[in-house]
Image 1: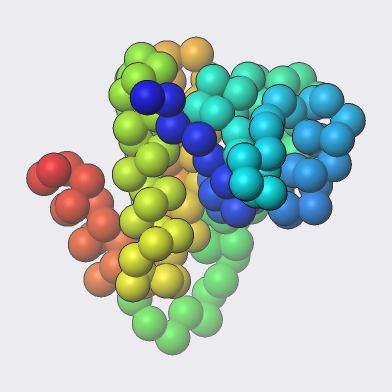
Image 2: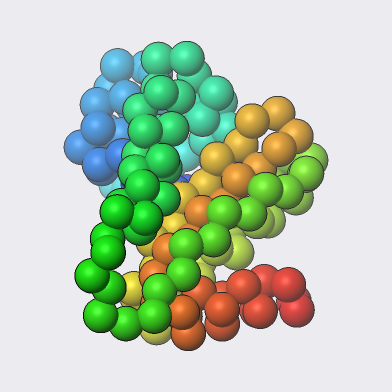
Length: 145
């Protein structure tokens, strides 16, 4: 069964606000459906959103800002990591990757991680930024599952 993402999950992965995503849904830039009063976006529609030429520059800017903000912060008070992972994946693998990280960041105790997801053809980019301990734990779980 194809994964469906909530607006909050799409916001976490793209860096766009939930209001912006709702506006994209209303204007037809993004396809989605309301299930039990909650907007959802299918994995295929999410991939289409990532490749939409009207939306892609905004997402790219949000993702780049995560890395830039990490590099620009010269007064970190704790150990931090910013990891950029580029993977070669088909659509099913990309769905599994986004689902794993989205679930971990949204539904678990790991609360200080910034997660961004990008798909361009068969290439997937995952950006994680946060405390050293939590980013390493999440990466270990991903690579060991």
